[in-house]
Image (cartoon, rainbow, N blue to C red; front, side):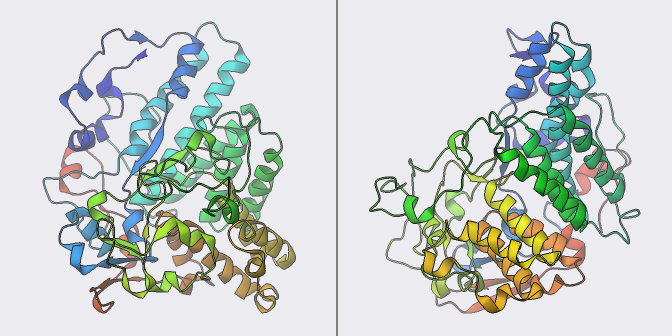
Length: 485
């Protein structure tokens, strides 16, 4: 283990955040016993190898418009998640600090590598540049997620004046002033890190190692968020070109097989609560880079479910429904009304929300449809759908495949079907909310249901709530930080 002053794991701006979530005082101890200073190139390589990006109960999980909630269990849910689901302006009390810290914990590590690896001893210039490139991809990805929590969606007309997040480039715990860059400056910074990294990145060799494939994917996603569809297509196509160079298996799982309890290659019979056969990230052939989201806490499993409207998007024979349960956890005699379901797969290993093959296919399909390549969009979409349901329903209906507008909307619905209850819908909602054509594909409400399936409350999302507030305690502790509306 490298010598890391543990309190230097993140800048002073966010040390206070970790105090709320750390398990013990030991996290902030100055010098771990037996540690050493990062000095040789191998130290920095090991530092990068030790990075594990994981999101615990992110805001996006509770804010997506595919979600609904059960009134019976709502009062027992965490106050934070209740407020997020209700789209409230205040998520944290005056004496609380935000939980959204995982990107910042890792930015310190990436900055340490970026600032020091080229001066390290023992490695070749090529080795050093490769490690530097990986760290730049990691820094860009973490800033992107940080930005998605605390800024408004990218809007070309206002991005130069909309407040983004502080751009963190130093591994320096003495820094005490943090000024928010504009959204435009943040996206420019992210794009530069990724673009600078590309020439020195190699093929995919491990799912926790940033590859050229992962970087091209992330660049495609960044440009998609910016509605720069030509640029997004360039990098998504480049990502596809990297697939064949991977040194580890990459393939879509066929849910007709792995979710069939009667098949020898099935993930059953241990599928469901306490799942043991669901593939770990290191072996998951759909994962390009392992970024996991810890799913709902057990005590909230029956609170937050996908909505009746989401249920209606699935064909009854769609195998993705097998990833969910319509039966309450710990209460097998009670079903959710209106077709609502809770996520029941990989309950302990989490959901993969980073660069993945399903997302890559759906991004290229959407970009092709937007560009008028309807045949190409249909082909990519059916490549995914054929692995998710029986062949007789995998084909895109002819009337939809013939219409650009209908096909784009169908692909956006497919994204819900593929990523329901993962938090990824919220990121789509952000970009679509400022889309001049498809903003009406976003549902700006959440509904609370009673046991009979009646709506007992409706909550409406205001545009300002696409950006979380930092809160009074955060503002008081950090000079220059400006609050969102």
